[in-house]
Length: 271
Image (tube, rainbow, N blue to C red; front, top):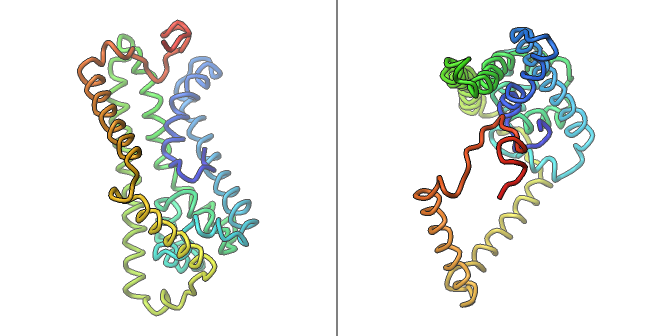
C-alpha cells in the first residue's frame, strides 16, 4: 500500500491496528501490550522499507523516466525548494520536517532522483514513530470498541488517539511548509538557480494543452442532444438515490462494522 502514490501512510498504520493487532494478540497469548508494541515496530519497518524501495527502486532506477519525474512534480516550487533542504549536509529540523511531513511517495522518489544516500534519509524519517503509535492505537481500540460490554471505554479512546495522530503530524507538516516559505524568500537566488526539467515541462505543457482542448470540446453548448439527455437522467437518478439512502437507509442497508465477518454478519450474501 505504501508503494501506491495516492495512499497516505496513516491509512496503512490504521489498517495495521485494525487487522494485525488482534492476530498479534493471539500470537502473544492475549498480551495486548506486546501486540501493540509489535505492530508499531512492524509499521515502522514497513514505512522505512517502503522509503528505501521508493528511493532506490523508483527514483534511483527510473530517474530517466519523464513520467516518474512528472508524477513527483519535480518542477513544482515545493520540490525545487525541498531539493535545497534535502541536499544540505547533516540532519536539520527542516530536513526532518520534509521527510516526515511531506507527501510520502513523492518525497521518497524525489530523494532517489537527487541521488541522495539512503541511510541519512531513513534516519531522518525515524520520527515517523510519533505518528505511527497513536494511529495504531486508534485502530486497535476501534476493534476493541466492537465489544462495548467488555470495553466500553475503547471507542472514545480510539477517537482520542486519532486526534493525537493528527495533532502529532501537524507540526511536521506546518514546519515543512514554513521552511519552504522561508527558503523561497530568504534564499531566492539559490531557488531560482535550480534548473527547470525541460522534458517534464514539455510533457506538462502537452497535458495542459490536451486538457484545454477537452474542456473546450465538452462545453455544454457543444454537446450532442443525446449526451445532454443522458447527463440529465444521470443527475436525476443520483439525486433520487441520495434521497432514498437518506430517508430509507435502514431498508436499503444492513449494519456492518470494519471487523465484521461477511459469512457471519451477512450470511455469506450481499443481497
